[in-house]
Image 1 (cartoon, rainbow, N blue to C red):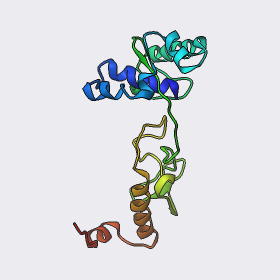
Image 2 (tube, rainbow, N blue to C red):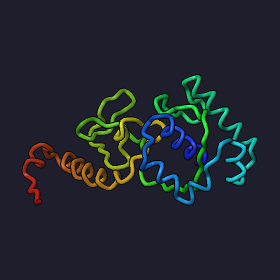
Image 3 (tube, one colour):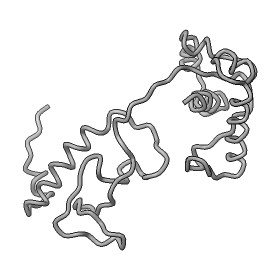
Image 4 (cartoon, helix red, strand yellow):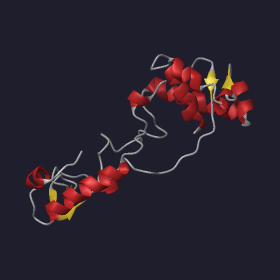
Length: 177
């Protein structure tokens, strides 16, 4: 998580969206206390061994140069080396609210077998259905998406499992403003 926070701010600082709002956010006490001009200083502020942090950052930068994350499978497009100070760190915590993996489906929500052929009568919806976020590899942050996905695709899978027509059912729904 520490590396993720350093990476987030490094990515922004290197031109991928650093602006006054982000600069203002770095004044938050949790992040401000984690600003440093070197990895040694950052490690000291974080209360972790400097050699471990430097080794982790060096390994990450090596993988960025290779263009392949051999350790965690992060997509190349998400990999940017950590090179220039200032470095930032903040305390993070996480919760599993959704997942990016899952079973492959066809447009009618039938589960596909290993040959991408539909398995008759086996429907999947919600978090168990894969590729909803465009991939089933390294997670991309997508908060607030899981409940709507479960409700919507649960209803559609139910319609299909009952032999209904999704297009007809959706057209007949009443929407209120």
